[in-house]
Image 1 (cartoon, helix red, strand yellow):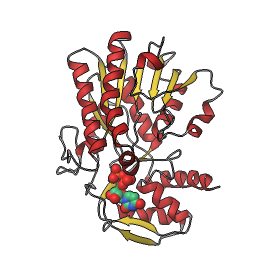
Image 2: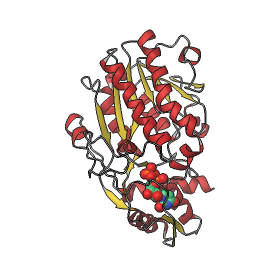
Image 3: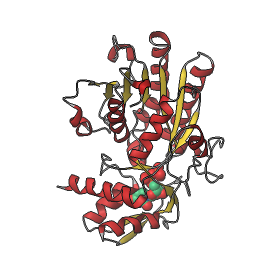
Image 4: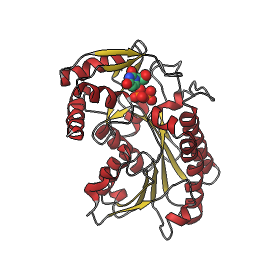
Length: 323
Ligand code: UDP
């Protein structure tokens, strides 16, 4: 059990999302009193249904782009994890305004609220590997500033996440707040929305339905996939560390696969290996791999779930979603 979290009041925005719901679970296991907030723009109530009778969990349906003094009235958080945001490229491009607001303005609103009502609170921001854009440095260390198209189709997400980092930096340096930024690389696992449009849900659902797997472009672009349990344990280790205020850490699994290799790994588990090629969306990064040496040296953490084991568990979950 993490003693830092014991009996602490922890607010998780985006609690009904894939990562938010897993974070609620590990925070509760660590003895925290968790308040989940979500407006269900992409989150799903079923991701939290198992917590309905948990006395240490409560839920507030609210849009975090509004003043926190309304939806967090009388709450004095010890910790806030800001994970609210559409996160898959098709979904954030469907909700561009909500996406740039929640990552920039809502970060400002939450930190302003904490500065006034709970200045000792710890704030963890869900940053992203998309901050590196289409990277010219490979793998990507935290010190790399990225190669992002500021007016591209992904910018409502990646530039807003970068702005969110800016807000965290200002509140840390100028107002003395304990802000931390985790740059999250591609993550997969149970509770991902099978319809969210990302590569793993798309290809797995297609394979399970006996349809060809859609490969965008030539499929030579790469991603490095982290199983959700590994990601969440890394985030928790970062959150509870006593000395990492103001830090930025990559969390992910450096094992790198081309999209064609990803499809082949999925085919090994599902037995369905048909592929169809479609055009590559604009600004699709050619490669992505985290350099996690900073997190490994600062935290007692490294990812341990292999892609094949993680896929097997994830595919079981997607099968249950089909029933
Ligand atoms: N992709 C694909 N087929 C799909 C969905 C995605 O080939 O059905 C590719 C996409 O073009 C990208 C990679 O898989 O190169 C990862 O896409 P995803 O949407 O999962 O997230 P990203 O890492 O691009 O944010």
